[in-house]
Image (cartoon, rainbow, N blue to C red; front, side):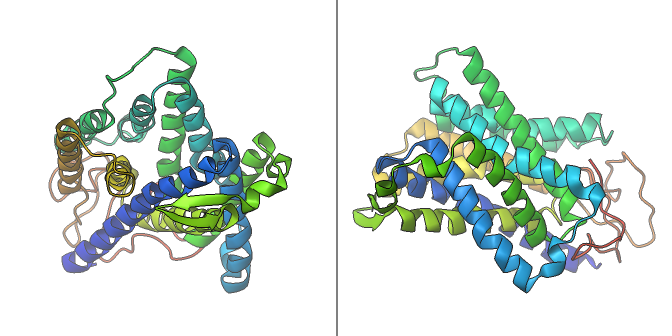
Length: 351
């Protein structure tokens, strides 16, 4: 792969990752409108994931049937991705929000980049450039400013534990997604993960226990009224299926360490949307925090993967210029980042 082609591939993956998190952030107003119509957060999440699975699985089965072919050895990956990356993140985040301020919960769940970087360093034994650590530190500090964690903070052991559990699940989403994206079609892995997540969430909060009238209850979106079922449909497609697909596809060409930092853009986008749609203006501290967060994300990108010169062998753990991907995966000229479908080709990396 020539440097220009590699750069184009990385830029495309970065765009997909950012698109994924913008869509996740945009799902907030949709979910809030449904909850204002009488739905509980857990039930909204349950219906959102179940509906997303019900829409995606048949489409993939018809259009890309080979994407749903998995081996017995893939079971752990599918269960882990569905339990951690789909159901676990949201369940533990809602539990944290119920017990600690939202800003604190946001910072806790977004400690995932630190956990991913530690996994890459300790478990994979891959040295990370100091700019990556600096960028992660800046990004998390900026997030704390955006969330204004010092306002109304109260210590709740269960709430803090739930927030940290959500961060662990989020780290699992990136690591398992990176692992699976190199082996499987993004559509098939997303469909399987949504099915697993739907089973878990439906068991926790069965949708059929809701009064039937809530489906047609009016949901207010920026002054426009719509039935709750229509907003839920948009939430399932735009706020669930599309961002999960885009995020997985991005992980074929971005490492989990880089992608996890890009995810910190989500709360910034959410704050901007709240400002534009709900009139919740950003303070000077939050604007400074957003700038700090974005600066950290840029640093991680700058310190990201570089392609190897032609013919130069990769040395595991080497983070020098011209060496392997400093965030945990080697990229050789002439070597594809990964297979485009479920195959026996050599994957980019492992957990």
